[in-house]
Image (cartoon, rainbow, N blue to C red; front, side, top):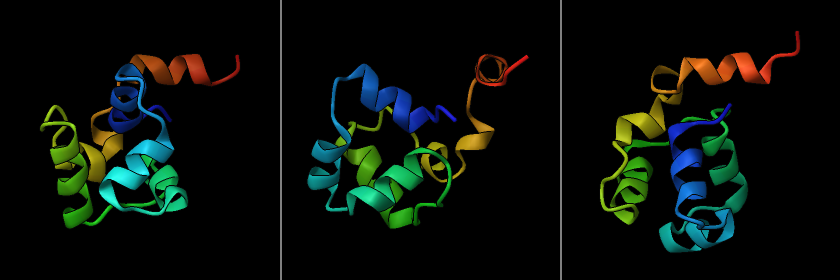
Length: 79
């Protein structure tokens, strides 16, 4: 799943390691949050949103499935 967080991070050319260090979240946990496999706490989501100058809403980080572009889902599934 290409979550809003992952899209924004990649768009800005920031590595997951750089983001992990900046927001003080373990890179493994951040990777799972970014892929929608783990829910971020509100504190963590706010910290990430602040890092991106609130270009992303904490709710987009916590509930990425509600904000992802549905058209991308069709590209990820084999036909």
